Length: 200
Image 1 (cartoon, rainbow, N blue to C red):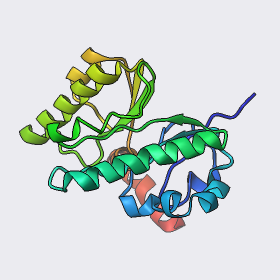
Image 2 (cartoon, rainbow, N blue to C red):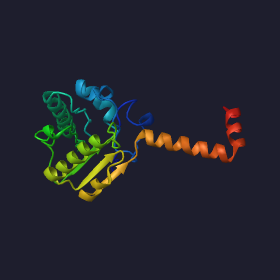
Image 3 (cartoon, rainbow, N blue to C red):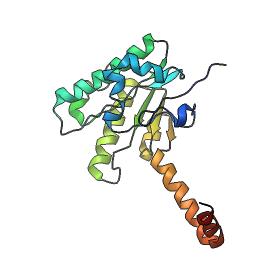
Image 4 (cartoon, one colour):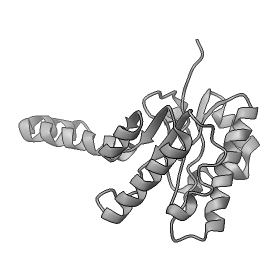
């Protein structure tokens, strides 16, 4: 059976190189995955254990010049094409900034395919950011009609009304959940917390 795994960037691929099917990808700050662009051949060594990769989510900030946003879209697509040529299955990661980016940010992605998005770094509680994300998501669905959208991070409920989605918790969401669980155990059983401290 073919191993179908997803690469994470930043701090290695997955924890100690372990195959992790529970998270499609991590979306760290850009510098953490610059290697896949600056040294693509070298990066292949770390990616070889995986069969499916998500293209790197190079940032598109709305206050950046459109030329820089276009450049990062190009880099995203170039990495995807390069990995396909190396035999990987590739899921395109889609990013946008404002409506001004819609002319290029969906180019090079097959219609009616599997795509990925991320809400990491998007403050969905802010009305403007929420509107910009939802408008871009709606435009993505209109232009690409994806069969399924993978999301790294929570999506506004309206997104699920437009297309089928699968949401993956972010690393920080999982860390917060684990800490909250530890706190509940400590409050319910103070002796457990003391015992853990003594063992450490």
